Amino acid sequence: MTRTRAFRQVDVFTTRPTAGNPVAVVLDADDLTVEEMAAFARWTNLSETTFVQSPVDERADYRLRIFTPGGELPFAGHPTLGSAHAWLQRGGESASGSIIQECGIGLVEIKVDGHRLAFAAPPLIRSGPVDAPVLAKVAAALGISRRRIVDANWVANGPEWIGVRLTSGEEVLALRPDMAGLGDLLVGVIAPWSAAQAQHRGADYEVRAFGPGIGVPEDPVTGSLNAGLAVWLCGAGQAPASYVAAQGTALRRAGRVHVDTDVESGTIWVGGASVTVVSGTVDL
View (cartoon, one colour):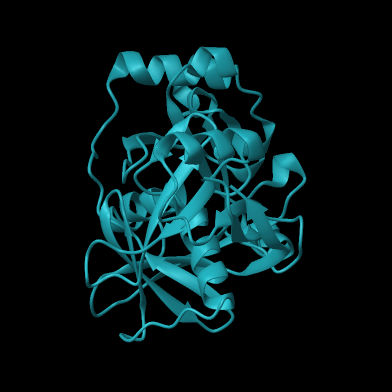
């Protein structure tokens, strides 16, 4: 039965509206069916639409269902931060001091870090080298030779991301991928900026994310991918414990993802600013 529900559209990984990655957040979504949630996600046509529900696990503050236009995801980063922002803005309070989100991969901790929210990067559920035939397919679809790929690794933490490392941020921005060639693969590409470029851009790395198989040819700013890349690269000593990644440049966005490693616990926190752009109600 249709009823009026609280709604927010939040821009994530930015302090400036329209510069990050939007997520549509439907609050009070307990009674919505999977079919109704999926239909609304297709209708918004955003990379993700979320639905805040009462938790099943008593340790959680809320349960989050995350949908792309192509189906449900067990976890995604920018929807996690945007939904937490909307939940707090509406008056949500956590007894533990941190926000505990329940989702398809289990419980995810979210903390307030100054003017930013940050989630604890979940462990990889698939890691390790990418098989040669798959990597050859990725290189061909990206329009580059296999020799230009410095390294590649599975960095799946819900979404089945393949992480690809190139030499420079310029190479990342020059990519013109063949989306049909990527097929169902989820591919994230990262490379460092020079010291001079990093100072100019306010970012140490450039990242792009491609997921045509889930209805998102290029995602503006991707929390799950950046979390997986950080677990891989920081864990292998190929990236510093803390850095800033730029994403969305090729789409005329200006997303900034902050990665910070807690030296005592080893927890990798992935965060950024969020800003509400649309606030009101939706009839579903």
